[in-house]
Image 1 (tube, rainbow, N blue to C red):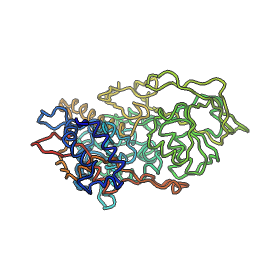
Image 2 (cartoon, rainbow, N blue to C red):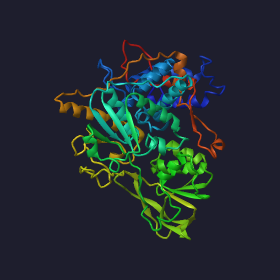
Image 3 (cartoon, rainbow, N blue to C red):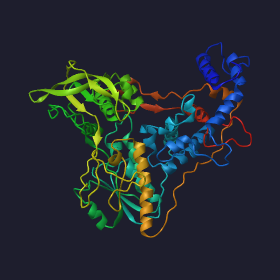
Image 4 (cartoon, rainbow, N blue to C red):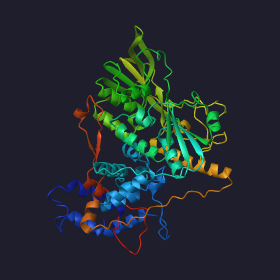
Length: 551
């Protein structure tokens, strides 16, 4: 249209993507191709677009932190390992990923990827598939026998007690070891890992991969003590008397929230967390042929997909629409692909029993009304729309809250009306001297990466606290980008990148998923990874020396 606007470029990208396989286009085969000729016409506009999407203060001589790094609660150096992937230097990418993330496998499989939500490439096209790139490198390294690096500290500093071995506790322990402390992690269960190993299904997160990472954390100098429930077997006061100078509470949110309807205590209404734990242990619960799961979060989806694999018919009951479901969208789509039915805009109002066991659940139709405090439209019951759904088992999965047996364990911790521990939002200090808390026990059910971020922040807060007791001061930790030279695209590569989309991840066929818990997602290929790495805008770099097409 003469001016070569960004909208024109996007229009041409879509046009090229539609016709690139047709004989009309012949992408990259002929200089007379009308689409490519026009794309070349807009080269300078696209270059300006690239510059605009980098650091807005281009007059600055310093490197800027990329949005994906800022969005990551543990400051993952995504641009660095993506750049190494673009260069085909996978070992360097592996080292960057493993350097500061003790649970990289976990993040590659179940992280909700806030980095991708902030990716600037996503402002005008597809966000970079950062999580897939991480998984590719880790899978590549595993196939070649690359070991997780063991990062040991001096262990000369004070003893610190960590309560809970989930993502928050493990991350805190990892960071404290690097700072020279001797952390001990107390776990109430026999199995380490919290929700990571106890409830997240194998088809999403293989337990063996988590155990491999926990083993590496242990080898770094962390002591683990299982089957010790603080508040029952040992008190917080006991820990201080045993010489621990600080305590981090990271016990998660495992207690299921009840529906609050008549008949909920009937035989056949089962706890979702206990169900998932049993399935993870290899048990096959007697749930009958017809199962209903109430809820729209990740727990509800995990339960439903597990039930389907056990051979039962399952229906998810959700009181809003698919747009409001808080579960990861990809997990919702996978559930639908597997044939799991989702009944929207319905809510249970009573459990109907026969001979002391669940026979049906009475439901009522809902409609969306005004927006609530969370920004979602509030579901309102529609009078006269009650109906029955005959079932053998009902699994209510509407949320979890913390269980805090140590809340009055010699100290009086401040507890919110949501049964979460109240802390200073920055330092994660509780109202009790020397006690910190973070993760789901503070926020309520959140994401794995948010819990890890809390663990990392807690470690530095504990470090500052213990240093202050000795009269020492600690500088604020600075996050700096790891510099990697940009990949320079040829004209042909540029043409391909201009019309490229996120790589399609391969999945296990639906029929192959029945009756087992094999991992579903398969990742991307080496060729896909390199191409995707080249799509990164490298927001961590400024344009230097007039170089062009450094993407």
